[in-house]
Image (cartoon, rainbow, N blue to C red):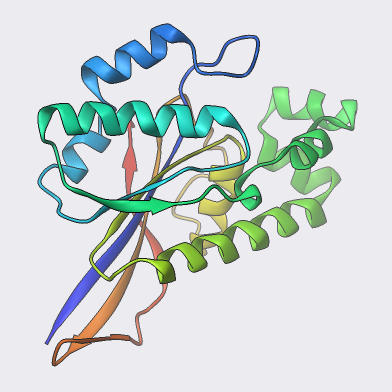
Length: 211
């Protein structure tokens, strides 16, 4: 008997250029140093799954730069890929973020979560529900004991975090900088070699990346 932990590490993409791609300088930094915080968490792990993130190229660019670094130094062992999923970010979603100048102005004064909860809470709830559904599907798609590494965006990573963190432990004022994020964890109870959902089979935040 035992308790197997499955993780999804989701962090914000690196610095982007005017074309919304990751800058060459940022890629070079990742290739040289990896991602602080992430390096330590996945060191020595045997089943690391690369997720291509959202519809935007910068998520795949960031995670593949990290994979190249990790393989170069033998940081961990990779065990496959998961495809990109537009529920983690797409053009229509981000256009809706920017559609109301009043919300954008409020967001710059406080943060995106507070601004949208005030002006359009249903949008927040819809994005959270879609992302949480996608996360559950991804965790179900990998073997227990795996760690998914995925790159996403702000404020959607924070909104997903708040949906999981029902206790309010994570500040709703949290705003991620580049290459920072959260560790989403789910436990699976094992009985005689067969993985079964436990009574504690919920997703929770077990750590952070970069802060």
